[in-house]
Length: 539
Image (cartoon, rainbow, N blue to C red; front, top):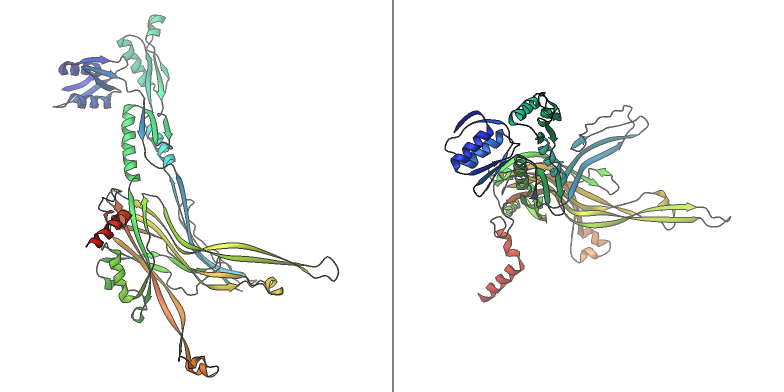
């Protein structure tokens, strides 16, 4: 079939005649079409016509119904949890040093709101104010799935706003004149045909148009249903968009992590030599921070060094194998081995900590109301908690090919000791009040990584020096007063440790224990363990 600028009704009648079908055409179907169809089926030709003329078709038995592509209500199932999540992260270090300098300077670089920023400042004053040095990274993640989805659907439908005919009266020639007049002035909401000899003819030739705005989107996040009132052509775009969105949103990744502390031996005091682990490790540099912090926010540098990290990626998929390789550099201690399964672009947080309780004390002394009476003392204690342990947050993004982009932030904290509150009011009372505040060492790292599914990334370089005391004595004689000190020796030695973090993402195609990705975890189920014990007892 070859047609050139032919009225669409003639084409439809010809198609029905060749297909031996009855045909019903709605009076509002107008327009002209041009096409060349070779060895194509009737539905294929009708689909091509629908792209040139505003129509839709339906076959009922041997009757072909042609109607305008008017909006219809259609519902879509969207299986996603009804939850909005906002995640905010902050990592920083600050130091303040007393100064009597005369110069004053400030400077900083700030990130845009809602994203990520790095800021720094340094101030000093002639009257002995403090020099300050501060580095901070703020990150923010917003995941409002339903809100974003509804707005995106409205934007898609807004691109296809159009004018439709709501009433048309008059003969075929009159309606064609009305359509031509409407093409000259699309902004008009009501267009009349050219004037006739009589008022009756003008009334019969009237054609009215109305602008059809983007269809209404009705969402029910609680039930996972979205209803859209739109034309068939718009519904095709909606279905295509929802398929792509849900394909991406349903992706999930299993993240295996191991946080290891390596006590370096004398040969590797400069750190782990990753070149000894083979050519499967590729080096990349990342920025991290390590500091000693007290709950009051005091920052220091004692016991820390090398506040940067060096990342390595390995094609070896076995974390246990990598841990065994680390033993050649010193004693290894696994601090935590978390495993997290996370949906695409969602944040997961693992927290294994002890909430350490300490008290802040305020003492207020007032004079007695009666002359010669003792002073009155009011003591107020406020309980505070600080988490000590391991906290890790991860936010993955999974693309179509299985490449995983991860924002990871592990934080490891421990108690170094306690410091006494030097408040003179606490020492002035009898007996003195001692308020001990824990000194917390915090080692944390925030980084953006790109890892293939099944590969292992290693973050290292967070090193620290610890001074430990050793006592050697002769058993028995060392306990003799005075003389025992001659047979006792005390020495201090330096111990250097390096913190290493292994990350291995595995993209989960099928969230089932029968899948290849999760089959290895099936053995940990109670039923499987019981069966294994039965088999061992029988053998």
